[in-house]
Every structure is written in structure tokens, then in C-alpha cells.
Length: 253
Image (cartoon, rainbow, N blue to C red):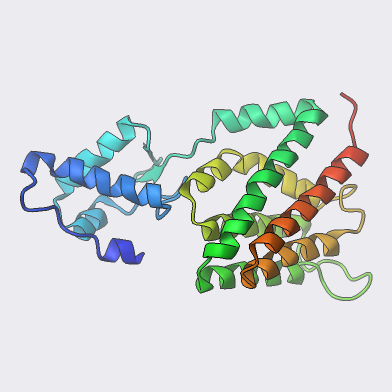
């Protein structure tokens, strides 16, 4: 539970009972806007929210219904509520666009370069020590999945390395402290996951797994040193390499 959740105030005494649900909805929406609740994240249960906000479960239930109707929340199969991601059909359409046309794939990398260099710069400026530590642990995991020594097989299969890389991008996004960027990243999360898996398989890697880890370590080092320019440059260098690989592996249209 975040500090924001632990210190959530009670509704002001002047708020009429019938408007308490509106106050609760505003509090939840504020958490989403601040990035305390991220796209796809499951909300605490009604009882826990009621205790956090010192209101009745009836008020919480009404607030959740309002936010669902407004498109901020959606019901989870089996019970519960989560923050809506702007992915879904949009992500499916984008995946198909990238699959059928190579130029679209390259465009996506160039857009990622602009967005992720900005996020790395922000992370270098704003990351908390805990967030920097989290990114560092992910880098250590990425290195461990490689194995040690010439010719030694990776400790984990390639998919695990792709999972680590996805965790890395999400951790940098969290460290950037921008709910807007988190929502943008959620839009391309599925296709990004597919691309990262491909990056850890032949023929894309051509034995370059260690280089990919070094690319991400350079981003981490710059964030840890609080060097925004170096962080942005490290992202640009990494995705520039990726873009070059895409150009060299161009598939027929």
C-alpha cells in the first residue's frame, strides 16, 4: 500500500451523503492521474477501499460504477475492478500493421526512440533510490540469464530474457513519474512484448545477447548517475542498433 493510500483523508464534513460517491470517484481518479494506479492494475477490493477512504462500501460501489461508465475502470472476470488500458483492439490493429509492412515496423522503432529517450531522461531526473535499485536488479537478472563464459548456454530460455527486458522498460516508465507515458506504453505493451521476444531469438541476435544487455546497462548507469543526457543518448544508441538490424533483416512487402 502506498503512502498516498495510507494517508487518504476522510470526506470533508460538508460533503452531503449523496455526493460522497463523487468524492470517492475523484480520489480514485486522482490516483490514476498520479500514476499510483497504472493501466491494467487491479484495484483493492471494495472493503479495503472503504477502509482507506473512511466511507461506506455503498459509496465505493457507486463510485466504481461511475468510473466504469466513464471508461476509466473495467470489471475483472471473477470479480474485482482494474484500471482500463488503452490497448485492446488498438494494440491488435497496430500489431497487424507492423506485421504486414516493414516500414511500419521501422516507424514504431523511431517513435519508441523519441518516447523512451524522453522517459529515460525523466527517470534520470526524478527516479527515487528505490526505483533505481529496482532497475539495477532487473539489469542483474538480464545478465544472469546470459550465462557466463564463452560458448556457455544461457541459464534461462530466451523468453525469460524478454520478460526481464519488458520489466526494465516498465521500471524506467515508473521511474519517469508520468501517468501519461505509462498509458502510452500500455497501448503498445503487447506488440512490444512480441518484438522483445523476437530480439532474443535468431536470426535477430546473431550472438548479440551480451550487447543487448550492455545497451540496457548503459541506460541504467546513466539513470543511476542522474545524467539525463547520457540516459537519453543510451536509449537512442540502443534503438538505433535495433533499427539498423530491422533494415538489414528487411522482409519482402
